[in-house]
Length: 119
View 1: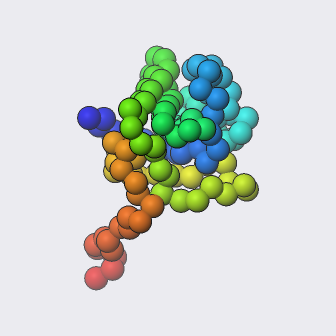
View 2: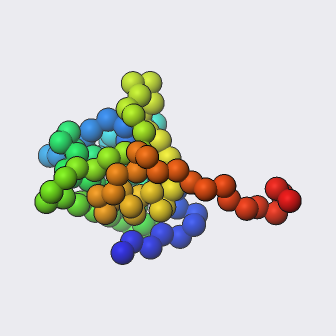
């Protein structure tokens, strides 16, 4: 299981990535296409064209992590439809973990959450 501190933000790319790209190629995509700095400690999720492979790029204090998961059956499903004008969308930590387990989140929705300001 992947445990993330609450300060880490997660961004999912809306377009597929070439599976031949390594750490440097994916970091270049984060800079050029997503317009973000891959060194800032955020997680970046990319799916393959067939959506059977997921890659997560993360920079810790002294180097990059590249996590790759391949589903033996089925496909990964992002909880939204692709949009040509948006290159990335934020994900909750729970959404990332469920998505990496191969769970289809397209019909899922969050229940209203309590906060002290609402009462």
